[in-house]
Amino acid sequence: MAQDRGGRNDRNNREEVDSEFVDKLVHINRVAKVVKGGRRFGFAALVVVGDQKGRVGFGHGKAREVPEAIRKATEAAKREMIFVPLRSGRTLHHDVKGRHGAGKVVLRAAPAGTGIIAGGPMRAVFETVGMHDVVAKSVGSSNPYNMVRATFDALKNQMHPKDIAAQRGVKYSTLQARRRDLIGTEE
Image (tube, rainbow, N blue to C red; front, side):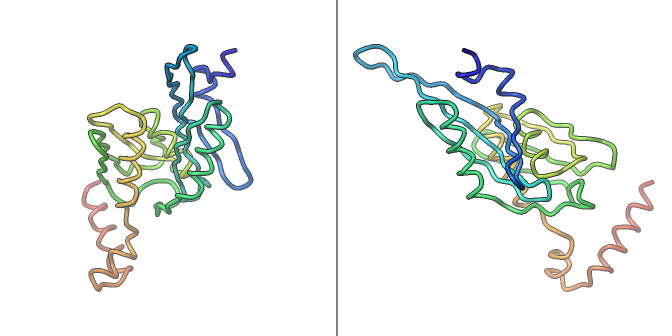
């Protein structure tokens, strides 16, 4: 019975591999509509889909049954994918902030071996994008929809050093050399 309605264990551990994409169910919301004969229940699902190589998207689906809501959310997530540049395929290039409504997030690049230090909805995004080391903090709303949207806002603001070098009109190697000099003085 709990499986039909999306029980807590099912909700937190659901992960499917669909060809190249991994999808994670972030949240299921049960809503009731009161009608003459009683209550009609519907379900809303929030799903994050990614290829674990830098592409990620999220989707929202609503239906009378849980599997149908999840299917709709997964299809919506695959349509709205973004690319996130990753440093060494494991972390962010720079620290970044994101916001959506009252949900605010701060994402920080982390050294190798740190792991994913983040709350539930943000963790799902980082795992599906293929990030291995990141420190994230959610400030404000704990609503999963706002947290996921704020995380995506932050990831959209993530820039590759090659893009920054092009904007500044300097060579990429010069920019990387400056970065190495800065890191060398910090340690």
